[in-house]
Length: 315
Ligand code: FES
Image (cartoon, rainbow, N blue to C red):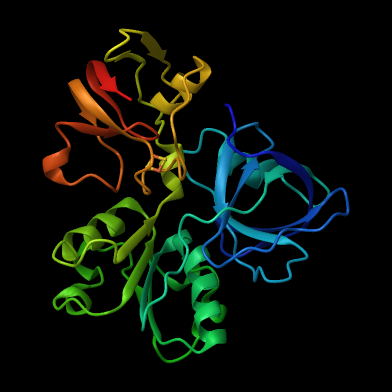
């Protein structure tokens, strides 16, 4: 995979289990150098021991960082990323890590609504801790299946009385009802990180909110290449160039490998940077950006693929 950012070796300085399936890793520079400052909501790209690149949000405070702290959930469908971190990244292991980047930064607002589902708590916790430190009002809703599957429970509780922790016990009838928070648009900026169904729900209930007020972060998008995915071809409108997209690659990666540069940022279907025109073909849209009415004519090539047959896109 070609990388947009340079990597640097870090030691796994410490590792601890947060739940049965979530482990926290503290990374320190193997060269003894400094770590650049970063803001709440930042992430790093990590070359996992398997060689797979994965993005993880930073949990720790980034004003004077002496380490990078990430938490990784072992995904049952993992094809190398989280399984490799859980199985092979032990204290002393060296991992290549990018500098922190932030596509999910807090914007100035009178108040905030922070929403996390499962492992999505990682950037949300960092945001809550930052807002608490600077005295900004916020509400935080943290949804998980059960207490046993809840990472950073004490740290979240310590954020104060505006925190709601909800366990659904895996029962669809017990899902948190967000409507009260969204029925009347407020002056809040909303930040949501979690599994796709949670983000789809927030997207649905916030459809009438002003544009730019609800923000999403979804690193599962980088696993958007799924075990059942098939290869297909992409034709470039205008030049007619045809690029093969392997089952294990995104369109963006396939174009890069072919020497075609396309602007990208999050590479997880949430920021909108890689938006291309869809000229023909049926797309399997996996992003969090496009509105229903845009899906016939546009595509986010970092995560979306062909549903069947080939695609023609315009860069
Ligand atoms: S790079 Fe952000 S949506 Fe594709």
